[in-house]
Length: 95
Image (cartoon, rainbow, N blue to C red; front, side):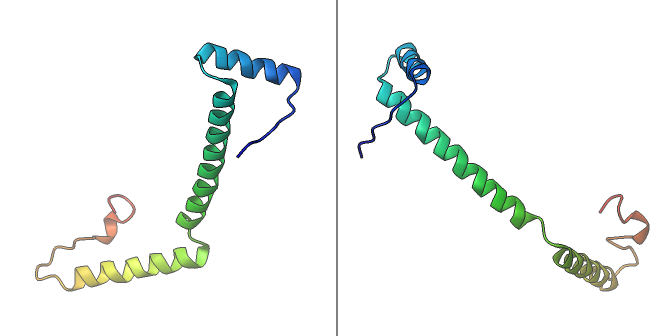
């Protein structure tokens, strides 16, 4: 794809200087910068989606806590010994 851009003189000068410093063409520098910017934008969008997915809403969090409590009770009730895997006095300290 061919793309024609009208750049302000100062931006054109910076682009040319950057290309000269790196020993590549202005087109290569511009393409590299565009790719990097698009990659960063995509990564930020994906990161925001992942954070939203990882943070359950209050109803989901409550359900998860209740499920954990039932599971812990079940594990401790069905033990053949009297030692608990999850003693209530250590809740919030070790588990």
